[in-house]
Figure (cartoon, rainbow, N blue to C red):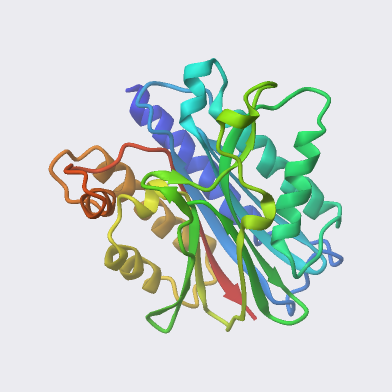
Length: 302
C-alpha cells in the first residue's frame, strides 16, 4: 500500500510540474511567440519503503526546471551513494547543487550560452557555503537560448541527455568515467579527505551546442534511466511526443520511461545496458541496476 501511495504522489507532483512549465503568464518571462520548452518530470527512489517527498528530489537524484527572459533551463544530478557509509546523506549535495542552479537562473545570474558556467557557479557557491554541504554528484544541464534557438549543454559524469528529431537521435551526451561504474563527479569531501576522494573540476564537463527545430524532443535523465533502458526503447518512446505541445501527453511518456526503468532495474534476469557494459569490462553479471530514476522530458516549441 505504501508503494502505491508513494507512486501516486510522485505522479501527481510530476504532472503538476509539467503543467506549471507551460502556464507562466508573466510577459517578461515568456510570450506565446517566444521559443520555449514544454516539459514534464517523473522519477522514483530506488528504495521501496515509504519516503518523505521533497520537491526536486527522487532518492539521491535531484532535478530542476527554470525559466528566464533569455532561456529555459533543465538539469539533473545524481548523488554518489557511497557517502552514506560515512554518515553523509548523498542526496543533500545533489539537491543543493540543483537548487542553486535554479535560483541563479531565476535571478538571471547566468550566461544564456554557457550551462557549464552555471554548474561551476553553483558548485563554488556550495564550496563557500557557511554550513558545509558534503558529498559528490554528477550533473547534466541543458539550456535553450530563446534568442538564437540553440541548445547549449554541459555534462559531467554519467547522467545525460538525448535529442530526437523526425525519428532519429541527432545528439546524445557521452559518459565520462574514470573507470567502470565510477563517473566523473563534483565533490566536497570532509576536511582531511581531499586526497582520498575523486573530485573533478566543473570545467571538466563536456559541452556542446547546436540549433534546435520546432518539435524536437529532449530527454534529460540520470544514469538509472540509461543503465536500465535499451537505447531503442528510449527512442521509441521519444518518437511518440515529437512536436507535442500538451503537457499531459508529455507526462504520460515521462511516466512510462520512469516506470519501465524502475521495473527493469529490479529484474534479475534482464540483460540491461549496465550488465552489457559490465561484461565489456570483464565483469560477469546479469539483471538491471537498482538505482534512483529521474526523467525530464521536453519538446521545443518555436
